[in-house]
Length: 149
Length: 85
Image 1 (cartoon, rainbow over the protein chains, first blue to last red):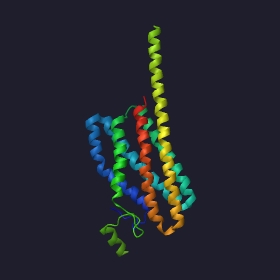
Image 2: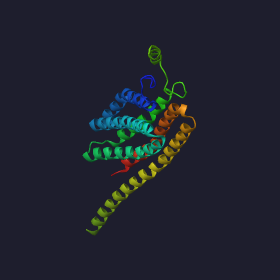
Image 3: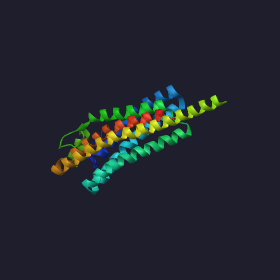
Image 4: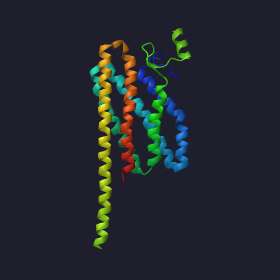
């Protein structure tokens, strides 16, 4: 895992990047369930859900990072605006895919909810809540890199 | 003939009502997380203003808190997609 502080990333960007990495790890399981249960539509729907979850985390982190650079007041507005914008974006994308007729709702719903909550619960174990290492818990590798620089 | 027309109208009305219900449900489901995220961010900003040196840790907690709260909105979104005709 990557230590956010040593690689020069903000804490939320490091966490979002780590979440995306974990989403890639669990993706084959969901894609397999999708294709076995619902065929090609199931595969596409599970893939769409995985992409949306990862994109949602990344976009959320990017919004927080950008807003925090501006001011603390901008953060409040950007986070709430970003929440609405991300939900709207997700709705538009999913309705678009549904209109084309490629969306299998059940595998999409299962993948979206399980991945979002599961990844967050998983990530919570790897986050350090200390002032010394805010963000991801430092690993041996990241500590060695830090010492060498 | 009138019976068939009445049945068709009832079917269409049911679909329409389903769509209205799905939209209303999604909208209502998005309110709670909106309030929750507002509370999370408000308190995080307050913490960062009081103790700027803890900003990194607070932002980590805030990001995870926002993501967890957002899961409620996603449940509403999923119900919306499942109900949509």
